[in-house]
Length: 184
Length: 131
Image 1: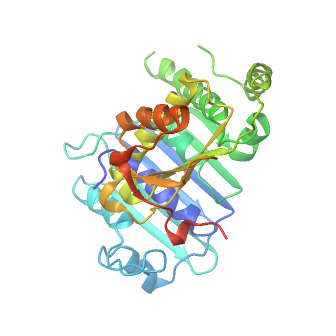
Image 2: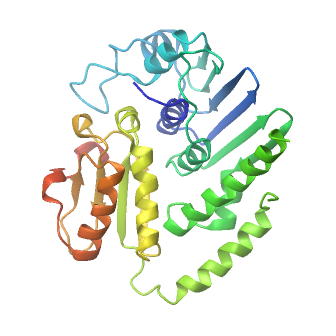
């Protein structure tokens, strides 16, 4: 089981990146009561049976890892949400993509800690697969957005260590301005 | 602090590039691949990733190494796993690469050219080898 909320998000975005998506969109909306995420991709999608199976920890397609009998990504997330009164919604259409929305109630005692949001955004932006990734982040009226192709245009290859360092600094500066506003 | 604009980021990048150009002799032929599947994330692969980037920067190797991510490498029992592809060294998958071991990897494998004997678990799994 993952420890922090950001770990669940990385896991879910990794799913989108492995689903052959060329575009992945991540929305992060935070307010005083909780934090909501929406991950949308235009990858291969799932039909109703596959969606049910994706939520079953004891089913996996076995393509990537022959002989393995578990697939735990989505079931972990669903369990963490159920035990902390969060909400979860999976919508998918075979051939056109998947949208997953979930929200953690941060006031709930059993809600996992949020973790390093800036590091999470850097991690997902650098995942191989999708040509484009859009991240939009809002918190109590403050917002900013990140666009993978723009960042690559500004920084070059995001897999270079120097790009990774600058990217993290850039995202941190976006987040930091918000923190100053939120703290008044 | 006001947030950085994309133009500032570009300018920043250009100044870094000039610093690095002087050192750019051998090209980026070293690759470090971090497993970021469910298993890796649960075992702290993100911390390992950050620690690797920090350690590479500390040793001035940032212009020689690419740090990539991949899904599960099939060695879930020894996560976090890190594959290292470096010229003159065998390609290996290291397991149990917690953030503390990441620094050791950079120092021993990349700087000293020695393998980390206690962390070797496999060569690349068939399903992640590029065609």
